[in-house]
Amino acid sequence: MAVSAANSQLLYREIYSHDQQQKQSSTSAHCSLTVHNGVGSFWGTDSTMKIEKRRRRDMKVEAFWDAKSPTSIFLEPITSTEELDQVLLEAQEVGHPVIIDWMANWCRKCIYLKPKLEKLSAEYNTRVKFYYVDVNSVSQVLVKRGNISKMPTIQLWKDGEFKEEVIGGHKAWQVLDEVREMIQKYI
Image 1 (spheres, rainbow, N blue to C red):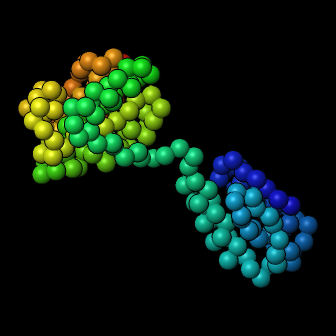
Image 2: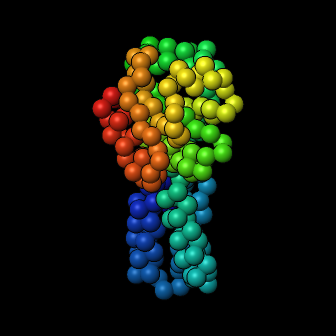
Image 3: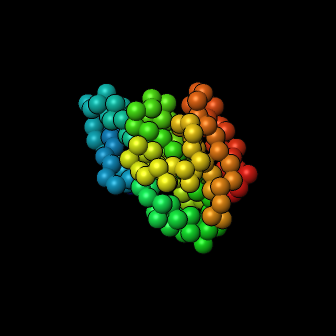
């Protein structure tokens, strides 16, 4: 018997019900599971009961972590005013907002916040594009264009114009909540 499961709960339920049927029909028969590319098949003997239970548990955990959508998307760098203009133009054509994280590689809060913003970018994968600017490695013309005075500063741009910003001097979870609220206004 082969089982193809969309999620771990369905697969586990199939394994459990098959085990119960095997126990009722025969005391010497036992079910084992082999999985290849999401398809499982049952077969085996009663002597492998503990190994098979462990294998089923590991299978359930593996099925749980097999996610279709990304959990994190790297922020793309902007290194010049021309790149910023191009990013804003592309976003304006599509009609999506752009988030720009203005940061510095010496800033602890910036370094700590960046991976959290990468996870947030996965949440808004198709609706918002996330970028970052390292203010120490770009021209001051670009920094002045963003009107940056403190770091980290997370700005939302839409239709080629600056709309809102969050200056992230406080806890990361609060910054992310503020960024989410800011995004919800312009989606």
